[in-house]
Length: 174
Image 1 (tube, rainbow, N blue to C red):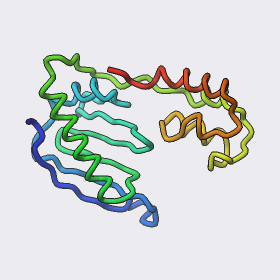
Image 2 (spheres, one colour; image 1 turned 90 degrees about the horizontal axis):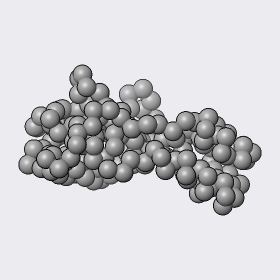
Image 3 (cartoon, helix red, strand yellow; image 1 turned 135 degrees about the vertical axis):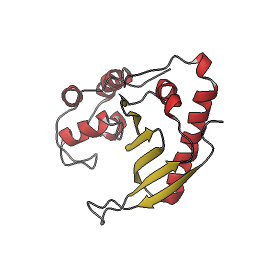
């Protein structure tokens, strides 16, 4: 087992302490530098940095940055959610490391969807039924995997299918 333990710190963002969401920084008790390219291969990192090494994931509207001695997670509901995400990542890191002989390491991030390409596939009604002020904001959230075609009420089934097809090329499948 590569990553055995960590110490987590939960806090509100300093830039705006009135935010409802929380952030978490986990200080890792073990160095996981060598596991990062394998974790990136397994989970399909959004961005991968070689120097200093780090991999960033966008999962369900959250940004998760994994560094050799630290994991940072934003947009958390509570401490329980932070704990679940950190334990999931600890298992993923250890699984990737233990299976590294079967995994081709990846030293780059995954391709990203284009916000304007997504916008072209939307009905562009700015109806706000999705809870966003404009279709451009909605397209940005779709690009970040925080929203999906099902969240746009004015879209018909054919439009949803086209958007799903476009987005499917950006979902990493190892």
